[in-house]
Every structure is written in structure tokens, then in C-alpha cells.
Length: 134
Length: 134
DNA sequence: TTTAAGTCTATAAACAATATAGACATTGAG
DNA sequence: CTCAATGTCTATATTGTTTATAGACTTAAA
Figure 1 (tube, rainbow over the protein chains, first blue to last red):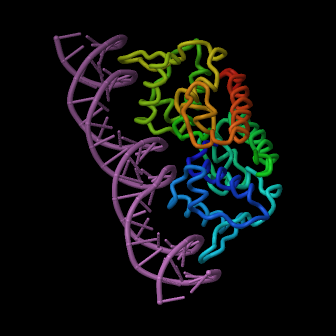
Figure 2: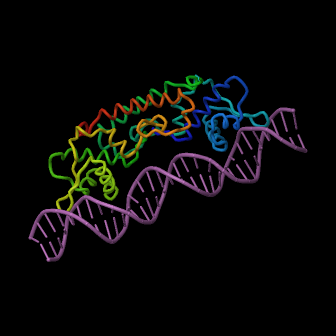
């Protein structure tokens, strides 16, 4: 499970919104500056997060973005699955995104990557955005 | 730590050589056929493994490839680090391949990925080629 | 009506993954 | 000595992904 820059940005942006949860929405520009994320790229990331129901947007002047649910209800696993796809190292060890890959030819080898998938999954399912507000 | 096709091929090919350890070297063509790996791609993979000292080659007629050391002495971690680079999900959580990335801005977030790196590393350091001979 | 926001879609630049091609070098067998 | 089988080396092709950037459009508040 290699994280792209996009996922790093998404996590930072969501933690930023978590700090404002219950308050006024945050403007893309402000989130961009505070976390050093390219503004136009962040726009796309927020649109994706919105499509998946993790954030809400408010258009027009005084608009901005806010979390769509409490920080306690959004896990790292959910966000990373959204942006990256499978948590597993190989497609054939993935549950949500299973696909056939060559390593299936060796059952024991595949088993190692399933075990890794499981521990990674547990770690990420167990952490929510609320755990990362300073 | 997302595995490329190349790593899957490398692991399958090495396990194949492990089965022949102590016997005659295996020809690229045979390893290719047995594991369904494109021959010309496998050539490149073996050259890389040879450069890193995991396999030896014998040229000319009756040539082929063999493990350069006992299967017990080659770990999955070594091979994956060779082919993929860092085991860590993010560069800033990597020890051997550290680099600065945005997620460092949030120490707690970074810590999660360091923990994941550690468990993945332990799993892969703890398994050698000998564990995968049927 | 103006202005400050978010929306949507296209595209570009750079890089990585996954091979394929072909000329070359080495070795053993006959 | 020559031929065939094998590994070596380097270049290139193809495709996809990542990481953005651009610009025209829509919405809402003042």
C-alpha cells in the first residue's frame, strides 16, 4: 500500500477540516495555504471527497468546505481506499478490489501478503480523523 | 508497499530456483514457462537479481541461473527492497529510503505510517525463500 | 450587479511499469 | 573449428498513472 501524494494531501486537508468541525466552513484557498497543497489540485481532491460523502461544500461568497460527519466517524482506511484503491500489496490479496495476479501461483507467498493486508487494514480501520487533531 | 508485477515475478522465479538449489542451474526459458513469466522480462529481472548477489549465472550451452546462497538466507524483505525500493507507505516513514513528504506536517499521522512500516518490515524480514518451497 | 467562492472538464508534463527487439559474448559438443 | 544454445546489454515502444495547471462556468451573498 504505497501512498500517493494525493492521499497525503487528502489526509492533511481532512484533518484541517476536522479542527474546524462545528464551526464555519473553510475555503479551499485557506486549506491550501495552511497545508502547502497546490490549490487547483486540492479542488479536485475535495470534489472526490465530496462525491464519496466525506465533506460538504457551500458555494458562493462565504462558501467553503466542511466535514460531512464527525471526525470520529471517518477512518484512515476509508480515505485511503477511496484515493488509492486496495490496501493490499497485491491485487490477489485484496478483498474489496480482488483481481488475479501471478503470485497466486504460490499459495504460501500469497498468504504472507494476505496477512500483511490484514494488519495494515486493522491499523487503518482503527484510526479516525479525530486522532490527528493536535 | 504496493507490489509491481516485476516483484511478483521475481519472487516466483526465486522460489523456483530455490527448489533446484544444489542441483543444476535452471534455464531462463524453463523458469519462464513454469511460472508464466515473459521470457525477455525475466532476463532483465535475473540480471538485476544477479547484480545484487542473489543469483549466479552460467553462460553458454548448458548455462542457466542458480541461487547464489541458500534459500534460508534470502528474505522477502531483501528482494522487495531491491525491486520496489522502500517498504514504507510514504517516503517520510522510510528508514532506508527516507525523503521529505507533506505528511510530515502531522506527526501523529506520520507515526501511524511508521508503525505500519514496522509491522510490514517484520513480516517480510521473517520470511525466507525456503518458506515457500511447496 | 459585482465579487468571491465552488464546479467541471480538458489537457499537459513527467515518470513508472511492462514489456519487446536485436546485436553481442560465452561455452560446450561434435 | 564451428555451430548452436545460452546469457548480456542497451535501446525502444506502449501504456498508464501521477501531479498537477487552465479556463470557462455556476452559485450565492452583499
